[in-house]
Image 1 (cartoon, rainbow over the protein chains, first blue to last red):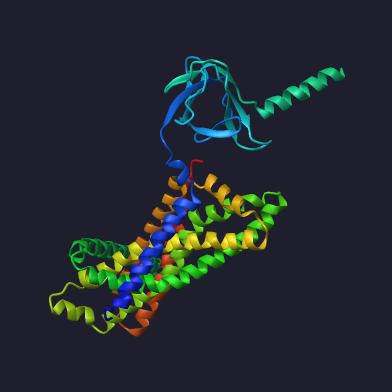
Image 2: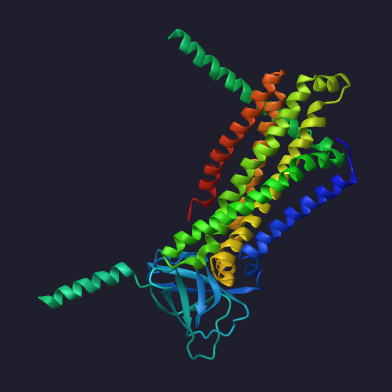
Length: 155
Length: 260
């Protein structure tokens, strides 16, 4: 096969379009663009039960996503679930008496951490702790309680 | 009975011998990389015949696969009132599975078979032994550039396939069936992860490129130097590549996406 400059051009075009395809996947299709975001700081909250919360679950305040869950571990001493969250550094005015609760988006949607700011003037810093928490509502438990209650009432 | 046992033992032995020769061949090919790098011309010519020539079939198939996914996904999802997640469905299935796998299958059919036939014919017409006579190592001169070209083209082709497919799904989904275009892209961006989905898809396609090029080159190199032998080797390339691609895909999927 002869080397021609047309061939070079075509190979160049091929490689360029492949790279463009990769960039397209990275930027347009995946969450890379929202992932490269600025610095964040970490806060932790202890829940009695973190339910179906997962790493990368969103953390939101007033319905706006401000961070994500970075780690979940079990504390063998207090038998609590320790949830670590990365909060976007832009939102650095979260009061230290904020309530963290685990909600479910929709009836069967994924679970997320909702932060409800309190009225304190002291803001949470890196490695700060949220003291007031509300556990996940376990659907099976709630249904069980409801059935039990209605059976009691019938007696 | 004895004959059957003999046949069984014989075929097991030959297949292991072949695997051994194949591995030896692979090592020789890979060790030739250093001597190819100073001569990028060789690589470029092969990139042309392996990559550029597969470009059209890959993009057109990608477009149609994406369009079919958009159509089928829409009908299934609209039963649950979840048309908005069409983008996620199309993108996840393309990036994770269909992109690497289908483009590798097409690549094996388009480029792999051509490689086997080319090398098989070189062997049949004694070009390879001619090179050896001139003290040119045919593995370094012929095999390594083709192997590298396959290895480099495959991820690019798979990325193109996925990208074109996602656009195809969008054309059908929001152009024809009325899924909101913003929802199509934003839902997709929310659920497709760069590391978990896209990088894993690229890793898959590199593995497939490696295996397909290896099989294609070795089958050509190992072909019986007659016209019948070359035609058999070409068939074996396509069949074995398809098997290995699908089998490896299963293993890679279990490793990559197993724990969630």
